[in-house]
View 1: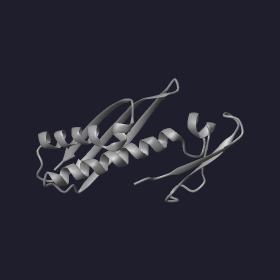
View 2: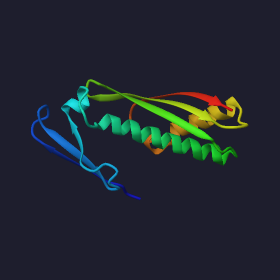
View 3: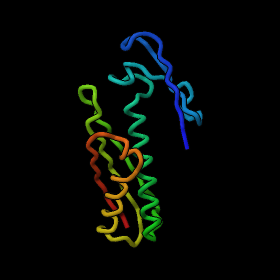
Length: 137
């Protein structure tokens, strides 16, 4: 399987502007700029997209882990915060709130840890990854 995205940029790094499109067209000429990346401007930015990718990948891996262990999650809600410092992504912090019936806290923690280590985006990132989790039965 291969997936693709395209970035188009016009102008200098600070004054220029660009847009991103994905193969699926979920992003279709979605704007990004210096302002949307380093300030509070309108548009997306690479770190936000990495956060979305990591949250989505981790959550799906956790769902597969739970299903493989005989549990069907009612809901998994994951937030990912990416930290960009001095030109490098230094941390990806995942916070997951889960509603899963009949699973022990120990089993859940084990499956969370496996998802943290083994989702493809975790494997891709060369940074510190941390996870907080809460379980509602």
